[in-house]
Each structure stands twice: as structure tokens, then as C-alpha cells.
Length: 495
Ligand code: HEM
Image (cartoon, rainbow, N blue to C red; front, top):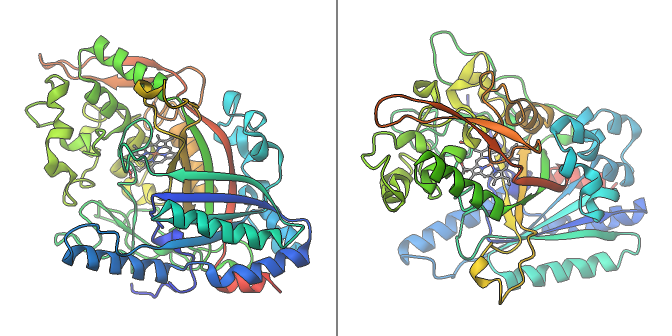
């Protein structure tokens, strides 16, 4: 089914992703409706759309291809804006419209803490003060290829903000790609590899399957991520293994003006890198495997991004660290392979443990009753970026080690409860998913002391299942649920 996505009306970070190395997030509070509306009127012409970001990406590709590499000749700086439920209230949205939003968005992330496992050290009472105690109304997202251009653009916007006395910056957070390991999060693994494909937007590139972008990347209906378009049907088609390709009902949530908008979940997740590295080293030594393989068992991918599920037949599977198959076999990093795998033939988790991060968060053909079709109703467009400096103990004498580093997790979806909250609560934090006793996601375990089941085939043919106690390596230090309206809706909100 072909339908047109209104790319000129949807904010740019949603479907395309700014995907810039330098980003910054300003959290705002309003106390005067008229001023907030005037400010919004002022900035709407600068809000980047999918159409613009996509056009830039095409130009970037074209220039790079002919000139053989990144010469820095084409660059851009973008801005997007999102609001919380109380932000809409502060903007003067009617009571009827406010009431029509879904419960999770109305409540906000703090109020949902117990639901999504933000307890103990992650309890909002321990969040950084500005995010834990203040009520946030709006979020400005800035992204650029250049740190200087980013600063200039933020300065321009803080100057605009200063002219509105009632609007305050409650908190500012920078995000930056790691200079020492570009594209990798702080534990050292390449991130941002697997994203859902979008029908009528992502180009089908698999000659054997027109329902995929790159091989293995299932194309989903746009309504999973943007309101007003067909959604996925959770039931499988008879006699068909893959995700149901038929269009489901159009996504709809809140007032009519939410069409072409998307819900944004933002989480500030602090990572305890030294503790993670110690754990991986200790367990690898104990189990007699390489550190690289141990890390890959926890994530489901090697640090390079190579999918563990595809490496089983590599001759070097059990060889010492210097022969890490994931790092060595570059072909696994190619578009044809990097996302092209399922877990169905590895039911026991002998290759990728069932609780490994990418298997918990996207079980592919293993989730729910109708498997692929069901799984595909719980997906998100992830737009995360690291914050804080890299953990480099050898430089500790020269640069202060602040320990406050982690991931700014950003994810777009059309239904927070069915997508982010479902994944966090019923998959990640659920010790009995996919199967009873599988344990917690070892990357993001939220309980203070969890455990994780790791089947490890030995050379002799046996496969003992190890139950490993895992520490809490990731702590939530702030977060919020936002809605990112269309350009037309932004205009509507100014009236
Ligand atoms: C500090 C916290 C986190 C770290 C270090 C982390 C790290 C990673 C890494 C290294 C990957 C593999 C790269 C890729 O496939 O793109 C990944 C994939 C993924 N993560 Fe996370 N992640 C974190 C938090 C989260 C959270 C909070 C969620 C959602 C609740 C999440 C959901 C996913 C999903 C859906 C995938 C893609 C799985 C796939 O499509 O195969 N992650 N993450």
C-alpha cells in the first residue's frame, strides 16, 4: 500500500535522525502563556523538517561520493522543538485537548518511575536536581557537524530566549560523539546500527525481499512512529513467517492536531564504565573466553558492531582475544550482513543469550505469540548520543575524571506505553522474558543485584548454562516524555 508521508510537515529528527556528532538539549520552563506563544511564533521558521534533513543527507552523500571522502565541504546545523503535557498546558491548550492525551504522556516520566523500574539509585529523588525537581515544559534540540556552529546557534537561541523574561532555561545538556571511538557508546560498543525501516520512506535494498530496507531491516508502517499513518498489525498473516505487511489502523493519539507529530522519550542514563569493564574482564577470565566474546554475549554484537548471531561458524570463535572474530571479519559489518539475522534457530541462546541487550530489546522472530508480527509493534526510532568524556584511566593525571558519562537515550514512537514502556518493563526488566529465568538485560539491569543466564558451548560439545550475578552498570539520572508536533501544529499552538 502506497501512501505519502508529509515530509515537509514532520520535524527532522523523527524520521531521518539528525545524526550529528555535536548536539545540545535545552530544557525550558514557561510562566506566561502569551510570551511562550510569541517565542514559539519566533522560532517556527527555524524548526528543521524531515524534507530538509533528507535533502541535506542526499547532498552530503553525493558530494562525498564524487570527492572520495569527507572533506567537510557540506555541513548543517539543525533545531527541533518538543513539549511536555504541562508544557502544552502552559501554552494554553484547551482542557479538552489536554485530557485527550494518553495516560503515560499526561503523567510524565517521573510519575511512571516505579512502572519502568526507575527505583533505588535511579529513583527520581536521586536525579540531577534540575531534572528531578523542576517541571519541564519544552525541549530544544540542537545538532551540528561543528562544535563552533553549534555554539553559535545556541547563543543565537539563548539570546532570543533572554528577550522573553518568563521563559527560563531549567537545564542544558550537551551530547557528543566520542572522539576516541566515533560511533561507539561509552562501554565501547558501536551503537545506532539497527533501526526499523519505514514503508514509503526507507529505500528497499534487498533484492530478495522488497519488504526490507537493507537485508534484515523490516519495513514498518509509518504510523508506528508518526501519528496519522497506518500501523503494524500484531497478528501474523496465515502461512507467513515475517511481519504482517498489511496496513493496520491509522495511529491516533490525543487531539486532532497531533497528526504528523511523534512522542519522544528522553532518558539521561549514566554508565559506570570502570565497573562494566571490570565485570567483563573478571567473567571472561572465569569462563575461559576472550573479553571481546564476553562483551558480545552481553550485548549481542561485538564492539565493532558485528552481529554475534552471524559469527558462530567463524573458526576463531574460541581463540584468544587477539583473534576476535567480530573485529577480524569485516564482511559482517557490511550492509548485507550487519542486520541480517534472526534468533529462531538459536532458541536456547547458545550463540546469543536470550537476555543479551539486542535480543531483549528486539527479539526479532522470538517475541510474543505472533512472533515477528508482534515484535514489530514494539519498535522505536532511536536517536541517542553519548554525554560526558570517555573513560581513559591513563589520562587521569591530566584530565579530571568526572565519572558523569553515559547515554542520552532518545526514542520516537506513536505510543509510549506500547513501545518504550513495554520494552523497558516487559522485556528489559522482566527476568522471565523471553523465557522463565532468563534474567535481566546485562547492559541495563535496573535492580541492584540481578542475574543473567549465559549458555556457553564448550569445545567438547556440552553446553553448561552459567547464571551470572550482574551489577547495576546504568543509572537513570533524569528524563521526560515529550511530544514533538508537526510544523502546522506548532503554528496552531501559537494561536
Ligand atoms: C546506557 C544504556 C544503553 C546502552 C549502553 C545501549 C547500547 C546499545 C548497543 C551497543 C546496541 C547495539 C547497536 C545497535 O543495534 O544499534 C543497542 C541496541 C539497541 N538498544 Fe540499547 N543501549 C542502552 C539503552 C537502551 C534503552 C533504554 C533501550 C530501550 C528501552 C534500548 C533499546 C535498544 C534497541 C531497541 C536496540 C536495537 C536492537 C536491534 O534492533 O537489534 N537501549 N543498544
